[in-house]
Length: 629
Ligand code: PRX
Image (tube, rainbow, N blue to C red):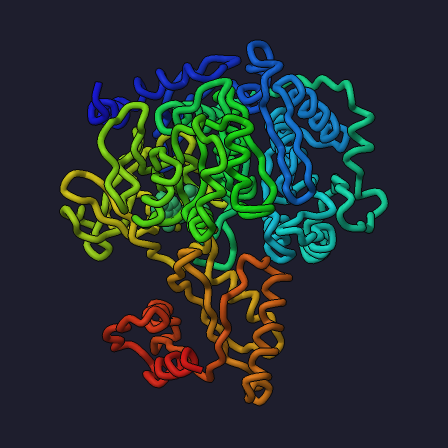
């Protein structure tokens, strides 16, 4: 069968197609219906079937692969390296599950995981899955405000955290940020379970804070039975940025996600049980959820969990991991490759990379030179894949397991099976012709694995994603794109105020809100501008309450530093703008809407075009002037 037929069947006969794919996982009880689309766009997959993500990722492999590696946890920050076999992973997950139960966590309860890239983070995720608790992993680089808004929304009974993370040898204490976040949030978790890595001193709150190692001792021999969940019950919530300052809780199911990942591991990622998978993302992002934790383990592969930089102790570190653990499939982001490209090539040449078959890159546009450089340096094919937190697995790529069409530079590929992708004209809602720019949308029903709803807010799910075009219900990706005459798609950036810094998705509103909390800032506009290394960086234009405080260059620099520190503390260093410029006026429409695209154009040296609705054109000159200052 060629890919076109394969794809066509997936969209013409989703019931038959996905019923076949569902055989890839263990069902404790069979489903009675493959797809329930009676309340579009809400989609229910494998209705009535009972399964469990932890069982499929761990227990299922303890027989045939019990003594084979499952989790390889490497930290070049602390110099530790430990391999857990499937049997050992099973034991640790059972302990963690028993620990959670002893803290009164049960099915449906939320557990917030704010952890560095250490094995206990994976144990905690799988333990939640085992007992039917809903995890919400918050990226360790986020700070107190981001954390507080997630605590508030997810109302977790338990938070699992650690004393600190470490980045480039610099310890980042987590506990004070967490304590501040809990103080800020109205909701209070009953307990905080803390891994003490001995990196930073911690103050403990008596009665609330519990030591991981101590509690683990008490449950050393625990055997916790799997809680079987109906396929459409929730597995996790993962917050992601949108247009407003309030992140959306992407809610995922159990059965659909397991099936989607199992199928993608075969068709797209070519993973084989017993081989090793190395995904360099972070468990705080969707790529980490799907392709560090659940995907590889569900496929019976060993997965590498790496804490550290790609260039420390030197630029050969990733390749030494590939050599040592015979990694067959690797998944990373273009930014990381661009970082490596600046390093001498010897680091790569030193290692035997013959085990590596393919490199997958995702998260941001992959430029030709980056793609060509890494592909020839490694002498393996590079496969771009385009998707979102919302979808959980690739929307566009080339499914090498079933498709032998050549890749086309600059294009992530073609729609993956199950996705009815279209490009619609933003104004008319009509389908665009070949090479005509429009919004990338997906027609319902979304395939298994995609978001069920916004946690606790069905209305927001409908309004945000499904109501952008009159007369038709289509899921908007908020990405611009084109489709060429041969069916390859190209992604041309976001249609909304989301920016992509080094493959990390951030909302400009969130950054603006944290900058506004500085006492001298009255108004601010943040835009993402092109950056050679990171794809995009944020820059801010702030109007001050007291402009006198920033008259000299030195005063401006000091204030800029102060504001950056506020962003670090509230949002996390990731959201810190590369520059903060001071102006007395921001370009707005007469109705007061910020003209972000015009600001962005000026920053990138483009013509902002005609702006008939602008209130005061001199605001644009101020932006130009500030950039020259
Ligand atoms: O704008 C697209 C960009 O990243 C967004 C999704 O980010 P996130 O929710 O963090 O999920 C990342 C999952 C890989 C998209 O809306 N994006 C993602 N992959 C690509 C991409 N842009 C271009 N090419 C890609 N391969």
